[in-house]
Image (cartoon, one colour):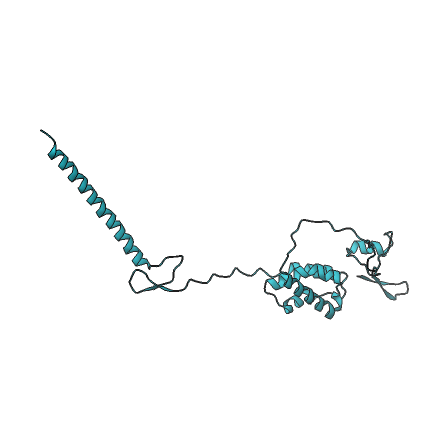
Length: 219
């Protein structure tokens, strides 16, 4: 709906209203008002089953912008919230079509932790006395004042467990470790020491073998 107030020849003010069944920009509405369109807008509700056509305005072109798709229950909640605001605020009277189009945006507000009060204040605070395009101003405010996304949830820490190294301590594993740092260090040092000892024993055995071979060789 678009509305204009103008002064007549005798100084009397009169109001002109334009109601359309499709969204119109201010320029398009002025063109219709001034008789530059072939057909005037209509507010008649088409009968069920009858084909309909756009009375005025241009077809909406796809811009490639991503439309949010929150979970379906939140979309229903967004539609209910918009309907409630529309019912209580006469300057933001939205049609059923407007509510369905704006419901995903309102649902994103709830998805980001906003309350119904937050949504209502964002839509109604500081409204001008006359709103020419309720759906347009509602969409602008829903997008421009959109709350920031909620932070990612912090993962819960792993539960405490007893150290498997036998030291009697408890630890909170970061991954899948079962022993505390000290026990893991001692175990690693023992493994290295054992490997060194095994290497030395192997070298000694090799040397002994060579000595035996040399002793048994014929002169």
